[in-house]
Amino acid sequence: MAWTTPKTDWQVGELVSPGDLNAVSENLAALDRVRKTIAAHATTADLRIPNSSTFVDIDSNFNLTITTTGGDVLVHFHGVVTAHDFKIDVDIDGTRQGDADHGLRYGGGGADNESVSFTRLVQNLSAGSHTFKLQGKHDTTLRAGAQFWVREI
Image 1 (cartoon, rainbow, N blue to C red):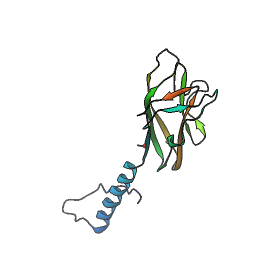
Image 2: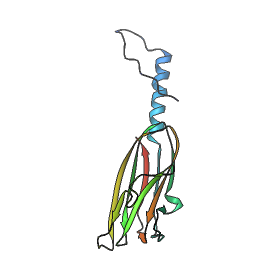
Image 3: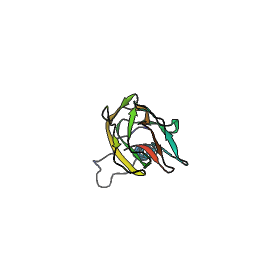
Image 4: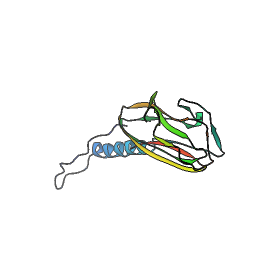
C-alpha cells in the first residue's frame, strides 16, 4: 500500500468517512512495511578473510539484499578481528563506499584482537532492490559474533 497524505483540515462535527479510515489503515501498513525493511547476519564461528591485496567479499552470508521505498539506509558492522593489518568496506550495488586504500574501517595498530565498528548513513538511495556486501582486504579473521546489518530509515 502506498502512503496517502493524511487529512489535516478537519472541521468540528465532521464525521469520519470510510475513505478516511482506509487512508489511515493504508498509511499504517506502509509504515509497518518500512519498519520491516532490514537484513542482518551474525557469525556463529570464526570466519577467515582471504589474504588479498584488493577488496573481496568476506562471505556470501554477508551479502545482504533489501528492497527500499527510496531514501536513506543505515549500514552497520561490528565485531572483533585478529590481525595487525586489515581493511573493511561495504559495496552497494557494485560501488564500494570507502576510499580506495582503506575502505570504511582499517587498522594497523598492534592489537591481535581489535574491536571494529562502523555505522554509515547512505542517503538518497533509489527505490528498489539493493545488495550490500561486506568486503575485506588482507589476511585476518572475524571472531564469532561479528554482525552486519542494513536498514531503511
